[in-house]
Length: 432
Image 1 (cartoon, rainbow, N blue to C red):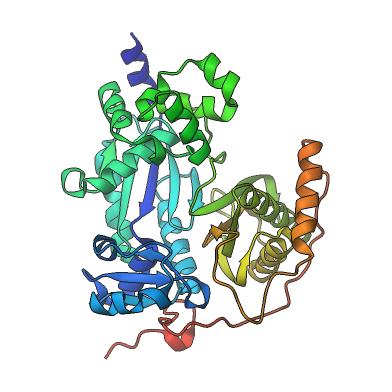
Image 2 (cartoon, rainbow, N blue to C red):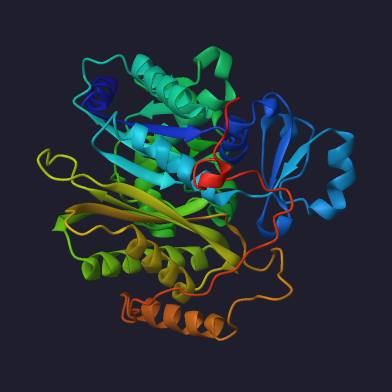
């Protein structure tokens, strides 16, 4: 009976997670095919540490986070191409990928710069493996970015399905669908506990102490025990892994690679002041989540979208990337940048329906590349700490920010920077 119920629930609604493979390296390869099949590493701000790699570089065992000044000889000895972070290029390529994904489902959540959830309602008569293959093919053909697709009845299971598709590309063709109880159990027995979406170090440690070795063991814990020892968040994750959807499309568990807050407005907005207020609020939420996981970010991506279901209205979908001169977790800095981006993107006469802020390029707040001349305002740290304490105490956002412009500009060191092929007219490829 339980199998029949689950099997029925699966086809009422499914989620697809589309994840770009080695996104930063893949973006570089799109415009430099000579890098295909070769090891590539991408550096953080100021050409400090390795923050992204191709599969070939991973196979050579170049450590993630390796300071390049210590690993320069290693990279040369192993013919690893080392590049500076080209955030404007990555942000623009991300926007292109996300725009393509929106063609496959009206309900899309941009989860990070290189991944998105698609809710598949009304797809009962579709072959979802073929549909996932169509998604991969179109993104690859139109952008050159390789992806993997995981499809399942919940967001957490779609993450697991995506990892299976990425781990076994030959067997899955880059697409894996969990559409039966047998596949679900096999998948959650396969994935290691620490690789489950939403299980961080502390939770992992406590679950191991309880005797859990994989996601399946976690689902066997009683609801009462989970609620008594953890919170509703962990209970929802358990239900998700059991095939019962409890995390809606715009409600998310913090990602280690990036944090996003995206929302559809209750009604369309056409004035800049309301847009600025919404974007500032989203940026503040992201900054709070960033500090909770003890991280700082290198850049933010802000996007605005009109209501595409109003066919008679003028459409406008745009995103902008802001790169910080130093890693930051300050709500002041992040909010200012987000508002400034919104002002630059806003067009009069457009009825906007959705906006979002993505913070990415995350690094531990106490372990990152320093800048000799520019640093975060030292007053921000105690101020943010005080704001977080007050908001936590009163269980609400009692302290909020006013919208301001970000006027300071800065050019970071990027000695290995590739051209901004899609965002700078002077860097457009010339075909001979």
